[in-house]
Length: 388
Image: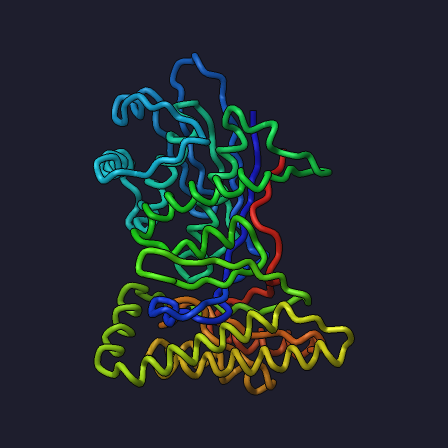
């Protein structure tokens, strides 16, 4: 048995950082994907292995099924029974990965390897098989690469899990999950994200699973709401990867510290960002009957992005590389803003419907001369997809 599953990355259109302080944020899927291909092997053979081939990294790892069973113990694996990774199990997974002597330049992959072993053994048990992973998403740049991996992996594992074949509908050359199975995929992916990030918001795995756009807001310290948004017109973005690494935890802490020093002022900034998210949510769902209406809608969207970037700059999360992108695109009257944590990472540039290909190519050329990497993406497309 084998299955191939892919899941999209995501961008934050508005609300990053302020969302931690109670403001709304808007997130959307993009058509850059992580793909997971799992081939199960017959059981009862000698030297049964669970293999993982990370094509983009040039890493091929394997664990004997007997070793995994000995270390992790018997498990009543089933995709429908959600479970969390305990600190004790995480320590055991860490030991299993440590034995592989991962090269120093790839040690950032370790938490993803823990998530792989946890999800595979929790859903399929110790069934031998080979998992091949490829991705179009740059790692650690704020585009949801880890959530995309966890969603694609969970989707593939659940598709191969007993009892789910009747809940997958054939549609041409792919299958689609029923809504209740999609929700299960998202929950399993969230457990994987917890291993990778500790305390994820749930935005990334939700967008990667269901696609399109969502409006996210923390209601209380322990609860949050996610509202699906249906964009009425296609959106294109130029994503620029500055290749500048950043520490998300440090950036979030610096904003919180500034909020403690300037509570009234920072509260006003967070309220302004919340208003931008609210207005953007209404805007993307508003109809546009003709070209003039589309242009007016796009102009408003660019103004909201520009204001959001200005507010993010004033709370201290921009960076010289981000401002270079902003200045470069502004020469062609285009609007850019950081997405995610800031401090480097990726920058969004809105691409209007009527923008000529020549201008787009000129901007990309200028950005690449700065050492940046560019991706043209469609925003708000489908979520996780599974193929036979």
